[in-house]
Amino acid sequence: MSTFNLSQSSNPASLGFVKPTAGTPKNLVSNYTNLLANFCVQSLSIQALPSNSGNVYVLDNSTAADKTNGLNIIAILTAGQSIPLNSPGQGSIQPAQYWIDADVSGEGVLLVVYGA
Image (cartoon, rainbow, N blue to C red; front, side, top):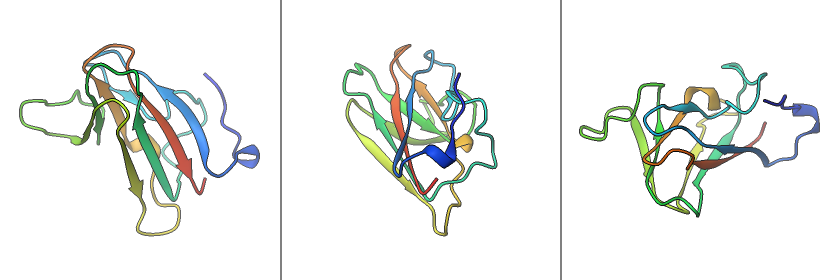
């Protein structure tokens, strides 16, 4: 794990790949030890990796994706697709509130934040 240095980050800033084990959601900021719930951004982009063979799921909590009923799923992304999440106000999106699940272990997303 790394430490994200806000004072040295560019805008936009990549927070890297998030690759969960299938059925075990992984937090969007799991690559960094210092990005907790108080880390806010103006917007973020979640892009499914172009090499993915299955779907990835953007979740609103750490519960595994309910693929039958769609519960806690914000988006279902196929290879190369992306979803932007924009705040209604300045810096009010907390990336730590979102999780990623995947159909295939080791497949995932690229996370980019804006206004960090």
